[in-house]
Image (tube, rainbow, N blue to C red; front, side, top):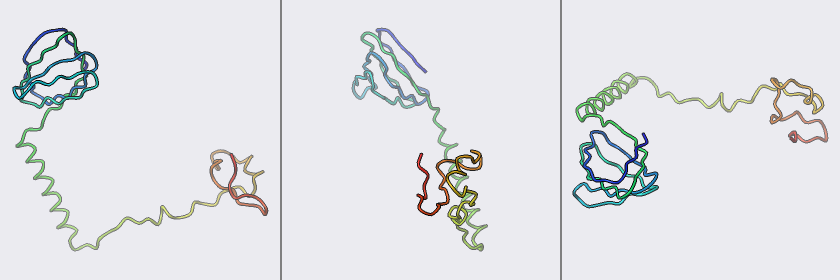
Length: 147
C-alpha cells in the first residue's frame, strides 16, 4: 500500500508487522529507545505491538507491506503437527528399503529422429526438429549446425 503524509507529529501503534520503503521525503520515528531518521531508499520494520512517534518535517511517501504475525499458540500447534507427520513418515518407511530417485531417464539419449543431412534439415518440419539440435554428420561435415 502506498501512503503519504504532510508535515505533522503523531503516535502510531502497529497491530501488524509493517515493513516500509520510503519513496519520497523523510520522517523521524521514535519508539522510546531513540530517534531514527528515515528517508528515500530506506527500509524499516515496525514490529506488531509497538508504538512509534512520527515527526514529518515536510512530506513523506512510503510503500508499506503488512504481515499479520501468527499467534504463538497456533505457531506451536503447526510446528508440533509437522513433527508428528515426520515421525509418522519415518515409522511407516522404517522397514522399507531407502528409495533414491533414478537419474537414468534424465541421462538417456534423446530419440534419434534427426535428419540425415543438412539439406534434409532445411526442409524438416519445425515440430520434429529444432535448429539447436545436432544433425547426423556426413563425411567431411561438422556435427553441429551453425545458426
